[in-house]
Length: 180
Image (cartoon, rainbow, N blue to C red; front, side, top):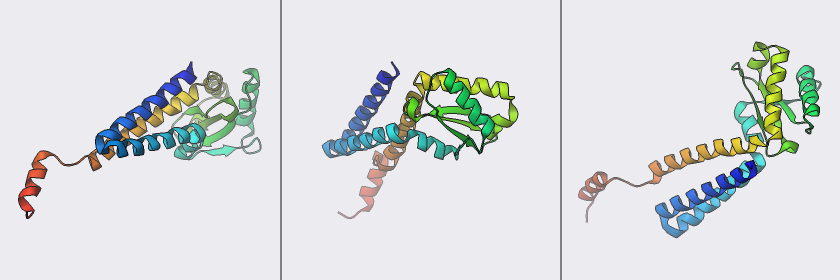
């Protein structure tokens, strides 16, 4: 079901870009915006986990670098019958954890330094189990697409403000000043 939702979001974003491109610059704008949507869809699918980790400033860790965390994730993923996800730690004081990636074979589980300091190992185990459930249910791709679409729509709004033209009052003022 989540794959259908992701497809619907991708199709919706592509259609939105096409309509906006056509309204800004006709057929050429529509083609340009459709190409932009295609590149964004491709990038979101293949590189979403890397983008999220970079946005958080998270570092991938090995079993040697974070043995307790790595062992906890490994033990819980075995119980859930999942492949071993990449494990990362984000240097943030705010307690948080998330899963990202396009599928279980390319998943990432990330925790912040803040959550590791704040809660007990048993509580952290519950949080990680929750994130692994997102991986098992393939929720993280849908969540990543949703967040990226929100960003894309926000950027489109900035684009519209910057390139959207002038209002009538501003055009009249400019036309009175310019020589004919």
